[in-house]
Length: 136
Image (tube, rainbow, N blue to C red; front, side, top):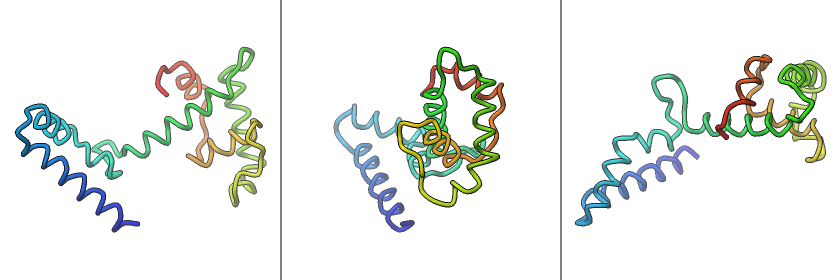
């Protein structure tokens, strides 16, 4: 797996470098942009100075989308925090040992997916911030 990732990174770097050597000014500008924005490091799952990687950002966006899908007109951040905490304290200890045991349309299925992404307690405040965010 690591060798495949390195081949992908090498091929991508070669492609970006070939853009930079192009006669086309737009291709050169694209190459410069990709190099300046550390595109390869993000794609390669290399952590930045704050300890975040592109992959971790994608996973957190997925978790946040799942949390938002559990929200409803009568559900509060407090309710979701309590529900997630209860699942984590009871069923999660056994559930996490295998594949998601719940039908895809159930809340438990989503709770499982949320904790599978990152097994951590989310406070009411954290959930409120996630629910209010416009990001994915």
